[in-house]
Length: 78
Image 1 (cartoon, helix red, strand yellow):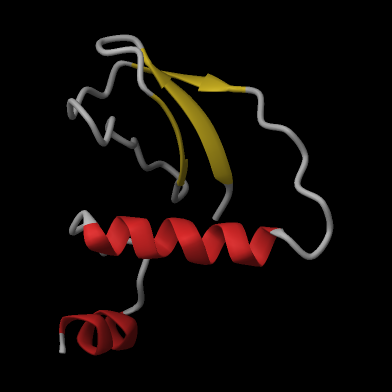
Image 2 (image 1 turned 180 degrees about the vertical axis):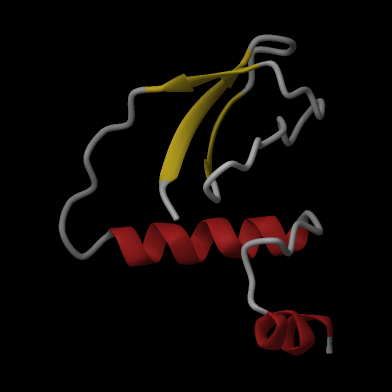
């Protein structure tokens, strides 16, 4: 799953998120889907797994489990 940077046209919030093919993210602050995809800086080798893990933990805290497998969901939800 690619990691993209977004700018929310509604509230101006900038964020990055993992996006599944065909998926449409929403702004984590206002929930708007009026987003502009930004050009992302390249990730140095060895850092991308840490960034992805961090974003997955943030998504789990916010209640977004679509990026997790069924087994991972069961483990997270206890």
